[in-house]
Every structure is written in C-alpha cells, then in structure tokens.
Length: 217
Image (cartoon, rainbow, N blue to C red):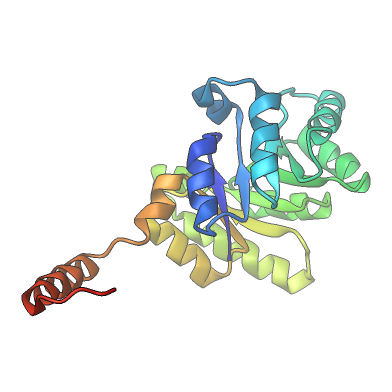
C-alpha cells in the first residue's frame, strides 16, 4: 500500500519523508488556505521534496476552465497529479488531461457508480471519501470494497486512493480490503506506531537495563 500525506505543510511532509513514509502528497483548496502560502510556491516545494505524485486541485466548475487550470498546474513539476471533482465537467476534464498523458486524481467520490465513471474517463486515481460517509452513518469501507471488486472484475487500471482518513483503523481496514493508496493527515500516520503494550514493554526493558548498571559503547 502506498502512503500519500494529505497536507500542504512542508515541514510535516519532510518529517514523514525522512522516515520513508511518503509515496506521494495530496492537497486541496482547504489545505492550501491552511498553509497560508501561494499555491504554486508551496506545491513546487512539495514536488521538489517528494518523488511520487503530488495532487494539486483545480477550482473552476466548467470543463474548459478545469482543463486550462490543470495544464497550468501540471507545469509546476513533472510529478503533479491534476485533481478534478467527480462531476460531469470534471470527468470531461479528466478524459482530456489523461489523453494528454497527465496523471489525474478524481476526488469527492461517494458511490461505486461514480467510481466506474472515473475509471472509464481514464483517471489515474479515484478518491472515495471514507470519513465523510461515516459522518452520515454509512460505512465508508463498504464503498472501498465495492470499488475494489468492480475494478478487479474489469481490469480497470485506476488506483483506489482511500481518502478522508480519520483513524488508524481506517488505514488498516483499507489495506485489508486492497486499496492501492491511502491519503492521510500526518498525525494519523504517526499515530500508527503507538500501542500501550509497546510502551509498557519499553518501560520494563529500561528499568531492567538500568538495574544491570551497564553501558553500551
């Protein structure tokens, strides 16, 4: 499973990247706002730091404008993935940009039917939003499982990018189902390391080692 980091915080990306935990990055208008930086500037810096795909999102509602913005964003770096919404216009933009050889991430997917359309339009990635489905009392993992089954049935090459990750359990369940990628806030990825029994074991080892009175090196 590939790990994408869902943030425009360069320092957070660098920390995870130094640990080998970054295969790509996803951004959106909300994350750019939170960063307080110019979209081209911060996206370029992220692309220089990370070798994998970096999603940069278009903001216009019409296909022609999405295509124009997507081409502009793609000039930032070779590893830019143009992010478009799962609308009829977004699918048209996906088809055009994909045919031009650009990576495209179709975002805000909430149904298997939408995911089929994205694959047909040539999407590189489809981003089903797990947490937001959970928020309205639906099981986001059911959607990941449905898309996995359908894509496998027909050999669609579009990668399932599980988004709106809220917990470690989301990551583990998405991995068990077979999502190709997860995109998560840095805090959730870092919290994967935590377990109370690990802490308890380390405390015991530390106490026992001190009791030996020895040093290493």
